[in-house]
Length: 126
Image (cartoon, rainbow, N blue to C red; front, top):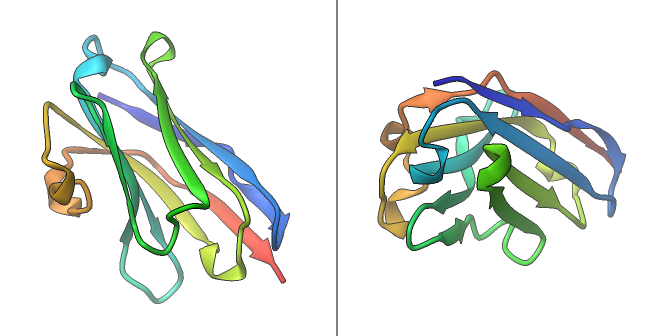
């Protein structure tokens, strides 16, 4: 399984970006996919996750109401729409995946994912 994250860039505070995570694999619809981020000098932290059947999403408190995670099973892709961006959202964003179901409270655990993408840089200027 390979994950390819893209869509990062430089944006002003208040702006928007949409990240994409393309997942290779025959059973993408059964994958749970999460987005994490890591700023310089900080640990990697959970941003948002979306599980399979039943589809449900979970967000870190810091991004609720601003970020939206979605998936397109036909394109093997998970998206992270980021609105009202703040300078503190600046980080390298990683997507991660695992096959199968996770309870929502487990979506934020980095050890619950088996596959990781290479990361895409998001920089929000003030």
